[in-house]
Amino acid sequence: MRDETVILEKAISATDEPVGPGGARRLRLSAHVPIPKYLSQTYWWAYLHPLGVRVFERQWLVNLILWGNFGRLRDSVLRELDATKPSQVLQVACVYGNLTDRILSRLGCAGHLHVVDVAPVQLKNLTEKLSNTERVTLHHQDSTQLEFPDASFDQVVVFFLLHEQPESARTRTVAEAARVVKPGGKLIFVDYHRPRRLNPFRYIMQPILRTLEPFAMDLWQKEIEDLMPTAVVPRQVQKRTTFGGLYQKVVMTF
Ligand SMILES: C[S@@+](CC[C@H](N)C(=O)[O-])C[C@H]1O[C@@H](n2cnc3c(N)ncnc32)[C@H](O)[C@@H]1O
Image (cartoon, rainbow, N blue to C red; front, side, top):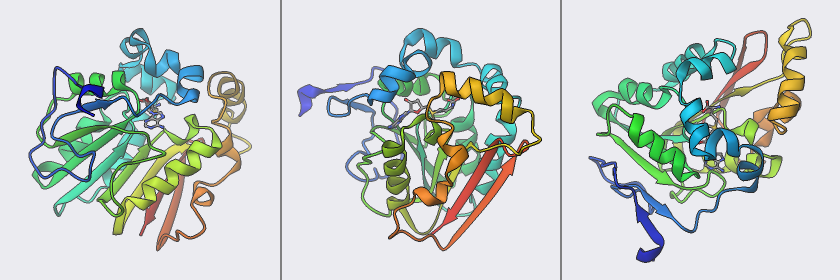
C-alpha cells in the first residue's frame, strides 16, 4: 500500500530493531488509521487543529490546566520506569510538554521508546519538539487497535488519555495496553480521578469537565482496574491518588 503512505519530511530514525509490523525506522502515516469521532467532534480544537497544537504546546499552559501538577505527575511516571536494564517502552499517545523527552532521558542508552498517536499533526509536532531522536520511534496507530504483537514491551505508559475516550474506546485502550506488555512488565496509567468530598476541586472541576471533556467524569465513577478484560489479571495493582484525589496513578505489574 505504498501510495497510501505518506512519509513525514522530518523523519525520525531509530537505532534498534523495529517492534512488530508498525515498528518502522521512519514515521509513516497510514491512510488506514482514521481519526476517531470523539477526537474530531470533541477535541479537534485541542489536538487536531494546527492552531490548537501551537497554542497548547506550552508546558506552562499544560501545567496550568493541571493546576500546577504537570511536573509532579510526569515525575511520578518517570520514577516508575526501570532504567537499570535494556527495555522497550511504549508511550500510548503524544503529550504536550516534555514528558516524552524526559522519558527518553530517564531510559538512557539502555532503552528504546515507541510513541503511538492517531493524529498525524501530533506525531509531526513531536518530531519537532524532541531534543533527541536517537532512541525513539513514532507510530501512527490507534490505541484501541495497536498493531504490535502480544508482549512487545517491558513498560507501557498511558498519560491522560483514558479520560478523553468514550467508554468503548477506553476499555479497548486498556485491553490493548495490557496485551502488549510482556510478562513481568509494567503498565502505568496517570489520569483524572474523583476528588475527595472536602476538596474544592471536586466542585470546580465538574462544570469544567462536563463542558470541555464530556467523558472524563467516567473516571470519577469507575476504577481503571475494572476496565481490564476479566481474563486479564495483573499480578499486582497499585493505585495512588494525589491533589486531594483529583489525579490517580495506577501501576499494574504482569
Ligand atoms: C494523551 S491525550 C492528552 C494528554 C494531555 N492532556 C496533554 O496535555 O497533552 C492527547 C493525545 O491523545 C491522542 N489520542 C486520542 N485518542 C487516541 C487514540 N485512540 N489512539 C492514539 N492516540 C490518541 C491525541 O491525538 C493527542 O495527541
